[in-house]
Length: 65
Image (cartoon, rainbow, N blue to C red; front, top):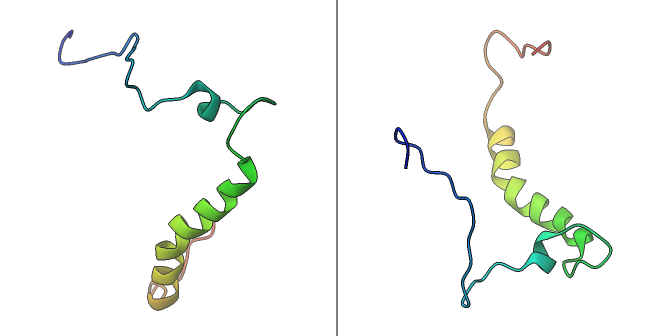
C-alpha cells in the first residue's frame, strides 16, 4: 500500500476459480469465442430497449461526437 494505492503483484491459491486456459485466446483455449456474441447481445439488450423508448433530444443528435 503506497499513498492510497494498492497494486496486485501476484496471486496464488489452491482453491482459485481462475483458470489460465479459460483466460487465454490462443489455439489451446477452452472457451469457444463464438459464444461471446451471445453474451454481448444479452448484456446490450437493456441499452437497446432504452434507446427505443427514449425520445431523441429536442436539439437533435450531434453526430460529430
